[in-house]
Image: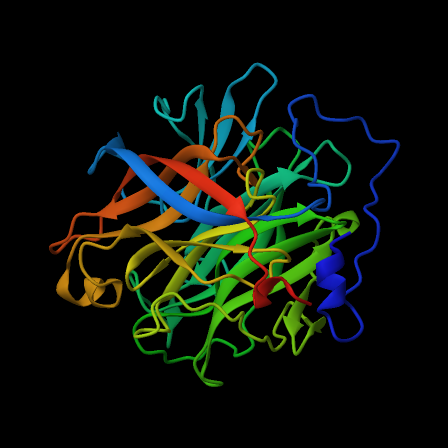
Length: 396
């Protein structure tokens, strides 16, 4: 169990229950990743996060059919033969694409495997359905996808890009992620969608999931304009529930206690650039085996940051690892080059939920100017650790 989660709960609904699964299920031979054990032993501090080797272009800008790729952080599972299945959001359809790759460089031709439910309707995923995280279901056979969804219908008119109202959905696959069946919306913002919304996004968006200690945790951004709430939120559901709608609870006022669909939330105390504290977007969560703790990469005003946590709730000070070409808070206004949607990938690990001391930082580079098209780049990363300091962040 996550003892630190139980300790900081301050009320009911926090103590983790043992992981359960269907004992009679036949394991899927293509699924080689199992839920993380609870962290054991001392965590180390992140003393340095370095990038090297320069930028490597993985998907060239303007590649036919793959504009706007990636458009969320990416997710993968290693296959028994040593290849990887990689699910990526984007493309002209604003859906989810599947790549099979041996090295995360030669991606091959993609297959579109999941898309929006149909523009012009009130469905939460009418206009966008992009994979955030893919992982095995509790039976060891099926796969679950937690995805970013959008609805663009306001006053009977479908907006081409913004404004949008976002939600977080669940899909299930019984053929190793080649086709997916919708399971419904699992997390929604506290404030409902309005008929009129100013430009930009609102709702619950950009989810990153991790399975640990008997629960599926999702860190995401929530924007509630009517309540004037904006920040990173966390919700969880028991692994045994397979994340179905109604099984989720948001973290609010010290415990997991409000409904995933429309409940209130307490923003995580994360500060990237204190001069523009509201510029926080696109969290990517993993458990880092070198640090023995949780690791987040995320975008803020200064660029791409890294920060660590023993429990997914209490986060360290941030480290700027990839400076922004121009301040992120102005990039959308000035049309400047910017780098979004970070994903850490360690090819030595079986899934994106795990990272090691080395690997690659993948991201989407926006070229600037009048286009919102972007393309996939990467740089090699290396993490240097040091013994943990006796700091307040580790006291409970």
